[in-house]
Image 1 (cartoon, rainbow, N blue to C red):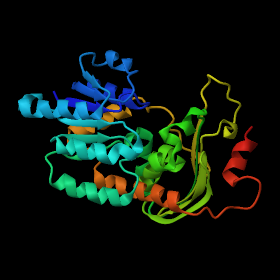
Image 2 (cartoon, rainbow, N blue to C red):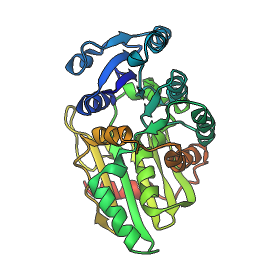
Image 3 (tube, helix red, strand yellow):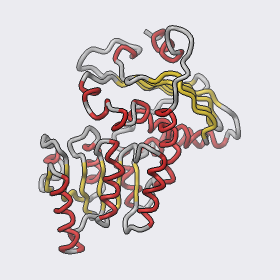
Image 4 (cartoon, rainbow, N blue to C red):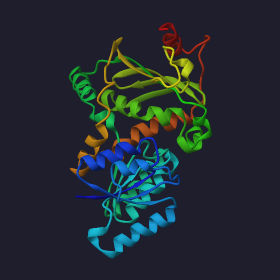
Length: 318
């Protein structure tokens, strides 16, 4: 049984990590979040120690490490805001643990190299969650693309997930802290596409707004038009408050790829792989981090017409 600590236990994605720790037969010994509305812990590890201050959390884990090797933490799961991931991964390595970090591992590609140097000097290692690579439908798709030779495919990626006014007031609405919409909601898709269709040849941004982004990504085996949005009005259906307000679509050569189901247990599968020594490390994340970093720094070239073509296509579905 491995001993875990979790940073950011009050966050949206933390319950999947709690479930994964429990489902893999391990234990959470300590958790940290600046907010104290974390009753979710009781459903998984009611005996875990909880802290709202990083300094006390740090001191507690260091005390465990020095007291007895059996009491030290083996893994630190990181669900904190994106801009803190780098520092919290470093913390995990510093106390002799391995890190399991949510996306994005870091905001900038040069941070990956710096973490690599620290990892070489450390007892633990760095793992990140790239759950789409573990989705059965995506694994099957990669097999088909690999067997098709060098054929270049046409892909449309659309992901719209409605967010309320709170979003822009939170850290997620700050491009310096979240990396912007392409990083915050798009990085898993970009990682998946590059994993399946190969290296990036061209990355063009057409639209760059606080709640929308769109562009063109030329990969070794695919030309990808992509559109990401947090705007409820962009949904191809009328969504009322309280109803599901997410639209996800990936078409390859005008054929829809169905992978909307099966997401619930992918974090558990990710943890199983990590515990077996087969997690996704620094080399696996570099391409997607580079893609979203380039998108964030690019000047949108713009397009003609009232709507971006992807948005017009969505509107026409109504």
